Amino acid sequence: MSFTPMHGIGNSYVIIDEDIRDPFSAAITLSREYGTDGIILVLPSDICDVKMRIFNADGSEAEMCGNGARCVARFVVDKGIADKDCITLETKAGIKKLYPKKENGVFASVTVDMGISEVLDDIAVSACGTVFHGTAASMGNPHFVIFCDSPDDIDLPTVGPVIENSRCFPNRVNTEFARVISRTHLQMRVWERGSGETAACGTGACALTAVAVAKGYCDADSDITVTLMKGDLVIRVCSDRRVYMTGSAEYC
Image 1 (cartoon, rainbow, N blue to C red):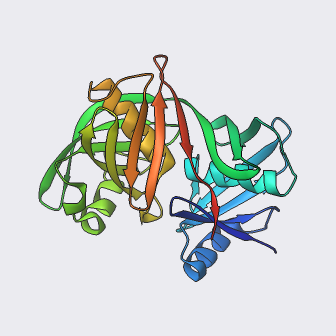
Image 2 (cartoon, helix red, strand yellow):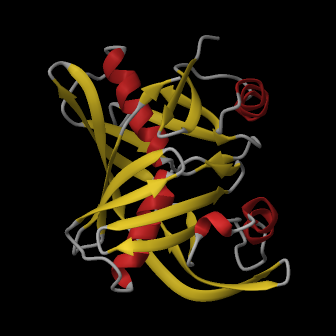
Image 3 (spheres, helix red, strand yellow):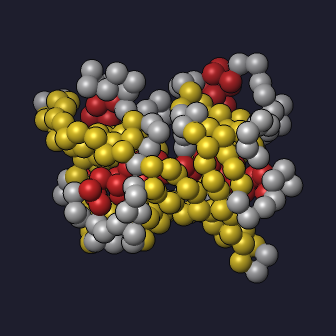
């Protein structure tokens, strides 16, 4: 089995361009050995240019990963699997469109059409003696967005797993603690379902921005910078709730 470690602003995965017998165990083993957040299988698709299956560090399969999708885009372009302006990607959260960009022949970034965002209910979740008020949202996978004064002050390793496994979220949940810096700038820390705290989460940044727009903190049809632990993503939530994400994809 050959594999390629990649990351999108620190959200790291082992990319494997073949089907394997036991991806669940492989995700646990490779994530532990290489310190990544999971593995991604890049496979042939009957309906798209390529298919992505993503497995978290605990072996569970995720519906979608925005940072992982950007890594897949660069991987298939560099490998000559699908070197085109718009790459279609089959995921468990539906078909996504990837737009790789080069500058002077050098790979620069990828924009992903992440699909339609869903901003759901405002709910309260108790964790470790504190009640956290936030908003449930979906980008094809579940999110819980909590606005606070300082995400850096949150004891995420303690409260993250409690919120993830709250009975409010029957399929577990990704949790984003976020701060509004300005109408065009948000900061976020994330606890990812199945992986723990990660440096970045693309679907989380999209869910956060969708909630921020719905609550009037940011404007629709504007580029919003989301600052994460190791870099920035640029998110645009359109008036029809379609979300576009732009960011880097690098080899480890």
